[in-house]
Image (tube, rainbow, N blue to C red; front, side, top):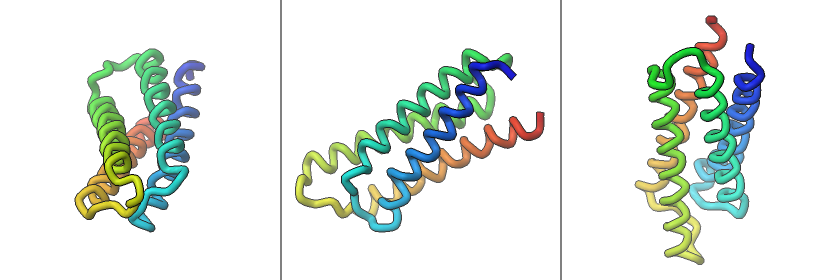
Length: 126
């Protein structure tokens, strides 16, 4: 396996850990915590870096089914952090998420897990 793919695998696993640190407490408590944004931002950096490594190192087309799922999951994560940041900027004192934003965050995290799992299955069955 190419070194750049291994780096991408390590980065996507780190993104999983960081996204989980950022989002699972938000899902459980329905509120934003102090570490939500730093962990979320670092998760996006790792996810984006992993995506670049995978595209560079892959021998397959970047527009595969897994690729499209992954790109959409990354885009949704970026959208979610932007929406959460806007919410926090407008509601400095309030940290409890409105129901629609809470549901969107859960859906985005689940979709990202689908993308992560599809990549894991591809690697396992090669």
